[in-house]
Picture 1 (cartoon, rainbow, N blue to C red):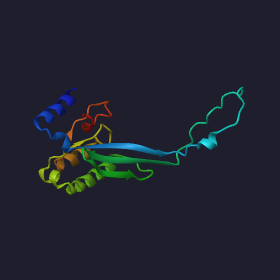
Picture 2 (picture 1 turned 180 degrees about the vertical axis):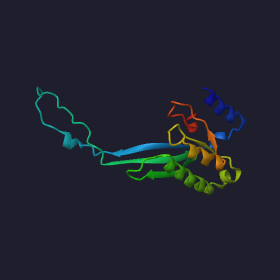
Picture 3 (picture 1 turned 60 degrees about the vertical axis):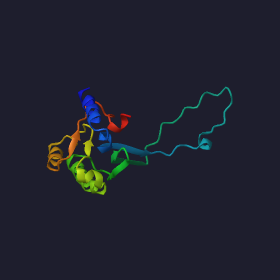
Picture 4 (picture 1 turned 135 degrees about the vertical axis):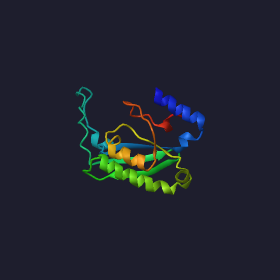
Length: 156
């Protein structure tokens, strides 16, 4: 509740505050081949027992995406290579790329007004990541524990 109150206080002090927040989120993407209507069609009599549906087949494609976005849209999208785990080293490299990528948004880069919002994933809270953020003077927006879907752009 305190973190949400702080966010609302920041909005009261600066009405453009949410425009400066860049949110980071990770998502898994899967691909399944659904049966067509013809493939699942089965001739039966009215007294036949109901057909049992098979479970979904395993995904042909599975990938993780790390995305940084703000109110205007995507800032940076990173597809994690197959077999790569998102640990503190990989995430720190991603933050380095984001830091360089932010130069493409000169209005936010020159002012240094952007604020990073990320969840409480262990890689995000690692000491090396916190040191990187401090070194580059990147302001962090706190994220409450056990609240996976709190993103400032969802406020309104």
